[in-house]
Length: 239
Image (tube, rainbow, N blue to C red; front, side, top):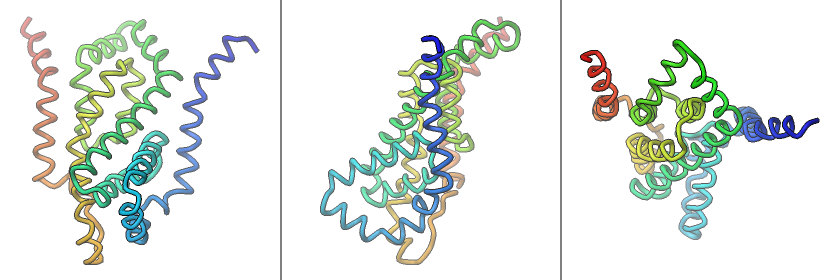
């Protein structure tokens, strides 16, 4: 096997590892990364946090990072667990940091494996493909913030698409960190109120982000993020 082929295979190893872990995790970890597991182990988690706060923070961030990196089930559960263990403010900080690190790792793995080549092929293409690539490049910040802010866009998709279209790393990191703040704060706040939910024997409302009082401000942020694209489009039509 030539050195070039070895290098090509090596490039795909991180993606293969992530895909393998995602498939295995989907079948083996679903019961462990669930609301029922959190409810059943809540007292043990609180006791461990009270005895080993710093270790709990580090383990939580590492676990949440792994969930995002390997696209494991339980992302929403991890977010509310952050609120349950650390309250809304610190929980939001830990959630956002962990999610950003995990998203960055999978972004880098995909870009190193095939994203850079795919983006280069789009750039070298002609016709519609080239226009799509040019449109993305002209509106990267708006696109990145939109896919983070729109609740209907799956988190993993928002990690993969930028890696495939040649988004610079720093833009991805900044837009991810800022763009996930609204959703992270909402789910963390839900987690911070889990004590009362457990006391009533209920289940938290994971669809709360689609409630009008939550969704409308996020829609307003989406419009704000899309505004530069709309202004550019209007300017092109006028000229």
